[in-house]
Image 1 (cartoon, rainbow, N blue to C red):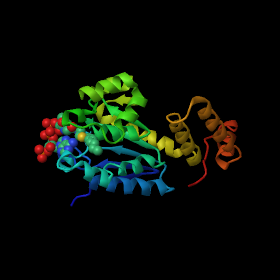
Image 2: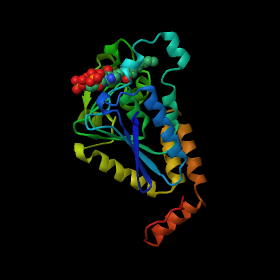
Image 3: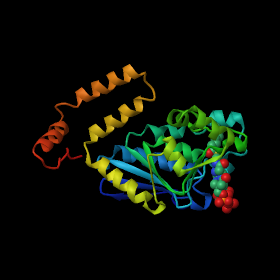
Image 4: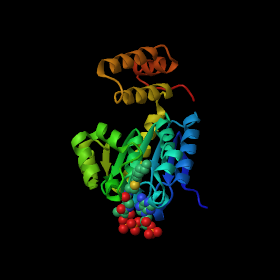
Length: 256
Ligand code: CO8
């Protein structure tokens, strides 16, 4: 069977492409297992500093694989803890940029929200249409979307199942940037290369600190940030980054 994902490397960046185009990259268990194993390997690889996750021109991913789930019982879903594997993808500390063309629906939209940020093409479409199938989002969509774009719009999307265009997704804060469709992957790769050129430690701690804002009360989050900020002083990368600024030269961060 053909690989369900395809990985290429450009310098310190990995481009991971979902590769079930005929099924609009529907996320079946085999694909999830491949993607999670690959992402965990990239996470451990010190020669890689960031990854871009993308799909095909027509679909980033049109959701969890409906055919695979259709006949299952509640007992089977509970026993398999269906979709729990995706927690491992979200937990990987490597910076993850979603590069979205076409449909990002259901589980596809949820995977976008598991990434650190998203760059979408003008023709991208987002939505949580599970209600139309008689179920609800099952990969974190009700929780992550509500935190990202607020209760009102999240309710609208989850209860009506409608799709949202890229410009609306940008206004709502679901995606960070919208660019012409053909520029999605190059723009995401350039952003990932920039991230990968910085101090690995600073990047990882920055994304961890931003993510804490979803969990911690403000005062505690600010104390967390300050403690991390203090801890970075005296590291070789802090010394180099600040010395380079003072000496008006590009920084050369600690080799991986
Ligand atoms: N699962 C399986 N196959 C899919 C999926 C999917 N999510 N989406 C598309 N496909 C397949 C189609 O069946 C079709 O296959 P075939 O050629 O063999 O018939 C092929 O991809 C192409 O699709 P279409 O012919 O439908 O393409 P269109 O351009 O006409 O339509 C759409 C594109 C609008 C994206 C349409 O495919 C669609 O509506 N797809 C389903 C979208 C959806 O409902 N996604 C949510 C899925 S459920 C989910 O993600 C989370 C479930 C949470 C459950 C919680 C349990 C614990």
